[in-house]
Amino acid sequence: MALQVFTAVTGAAWESELVGELDRADHGVTVVRRCVDIGDLLAAAATGTGQAALLSAELRRLDGDAVARLLAAGVAVVGLVEPGDRTGADRLRQLGVSRVLPADADAAQIARALREAVSGVPATGHDVGDPRAALPVLGLPEDPADRPTGRGRVVAVWGPTGAPGRTTVAVSVADETARLGVSTLLVDADVYGGVVAQVLGLLDESPGIAAAARLASAGTLDVPGLARTAWAVAPQLRVLTGLSRADRWPEVRPQSVETLLEQARRLSALTVVDCAFCVEEDEELSFDTAAPRRNGATVAVLERADTVLCVSGADPVALQRTVRALGQLREVLPDVTPVVVVNQVRRGPVPGDPEQEIATALSRFAGIRVGAFLPADRRAADAALAAGRTLAEVAERSPLRVALRTLAAELAEVPAPTRRGLRRRR
Image 1 (cartoon, one colour):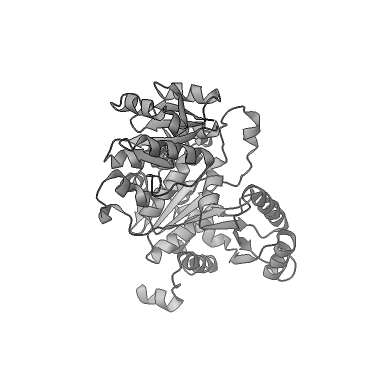
Image 2 (cartoon, rainbow, N blue to C red):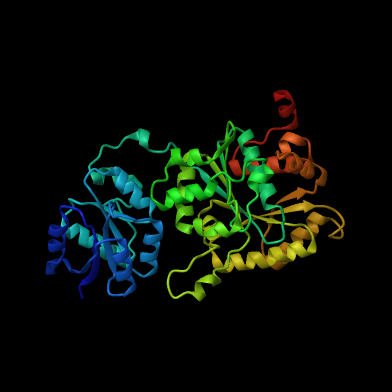
């Protein structure tokens, strides 16, 4: 049976000839509808009469949400760009199109790409889906200056509900890695109430993650654009502030977050993301079509992070919440193994040796080892919060700050400075 395909490449001089070539019987492809715009394409995809869509980078109002809706409707997407149009190819990749071909490719190659997209075959060097293969396929010279010098790492700071100290850990880890000479980007991706801007004394009405998400949705987010939307608070530290209001969560879509993280890896050696607590996907059950996913941003970050820190409190109630949250995370993302960081460790809530008792409880009920213990230091934490500064600025000798500095050095894979080294630098 021939593959049923929609096309949306209006305005291109080669569109009619391409459709005629694809309709030849020996290619195994049938064009069932030639759509005039993105609205027409989405309506056709909703009918279920097609299995793939062939669209051009110049299609008006094409964004990441439209591509996500096509994929949710079970329609594989293949993009076409003018020969030599590197910008158009990069934009389509940002929008989530895994296969991009030059318009002068022969019909047999395009038909093969459509069949592979429908069958789920990973993109190869024959198309532009792989950024490393993009330039040769487009016939452009490979410019080393256009490629990132390295691929940065992403650390997601997550944890159960109940204010276990996710933001404190995220801000402190980002600040400490920057002080260790590692270029760092701190991203506030908490869609339920991000407060990174307030903790650092920044203007929370700045565009931040909402502006970066809009650029990503339009396919125009790049490294300079991401740098412009972030605050430069220190020579090695940038901060992408969160949503000013929790009801603006629809502006931060999962596809946009994925693109943001990819550009963040190019911008900084380490990206620290402060995530929301919730990972459930029940909202999808209430919709017949592609559903809005408030927790999709959190799931996208956790799924693509190199390291996931699960921040837990040290009292019995917080530990119970952590055990439940870890179980839910295991159901949603079974391939993610978080590193548990127990915050606010002190004597009193837990009898005996708190570290030993907590480690035993989490090993027994969650089957996981504790990666780090952070001591409670209410005085230092309150001083930092009141001043809108970091622990290193207001209480550099705090036991909490020392523990966070050690954790940051491990995450950044650099040696932690000793107290003697700190005094020498001062």
